[in-house]
Image (cartoon, rainbow, N blue to C red; front, side):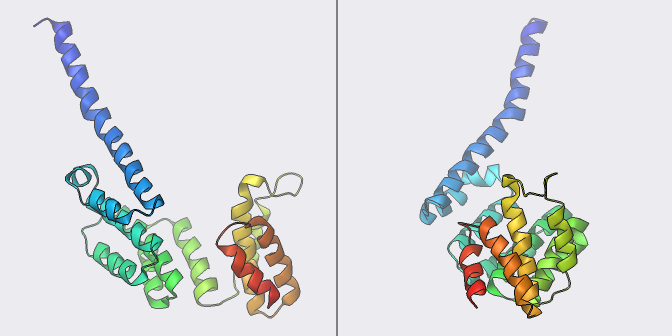
Length: 221
């Protein structure tokens, strides 16, 4: 066999090894997401439990997608059980931090303070300082109903503004989230003037989001 043909075979082999698996993974992931978006949960489960999925995705990735299905279906009891199943898996530090974030939002939605705290502790132990700080703020405001992060969030909000003191359109959701959390804290302090100021801004920046109806109720209250 001539050397150039040998090199060609080696190059083809490397391409198959390096390129084909990521392409298959991306294709199959898109297929699973299409199942979820179309609410075809039976087909989603069938695809997720298929042999191809098992050889394409890690166990953690598959169970994370299963958790997404339970969240989309608002089956919070099953989501809770799924988080516990995943916590008992053999996970890397990075995966423990990822699970902590996912689990935190599961328990945030269902109002389970102790379990949300446990998930936050996973992130504090295995995640980054920024990841932990973001959860600590939400835990304090949304679950413990505290108002100690007003200045912190106002400073973050100010840093989003451009040179003209305006919020760029691509940062509307982020700004609106800060405004919502600031407004909530003022509501705990019974400061209606500042509450309305920040929640009115949040209402504008968070149009057509899950927050919109809740903000409207708070402003009417």
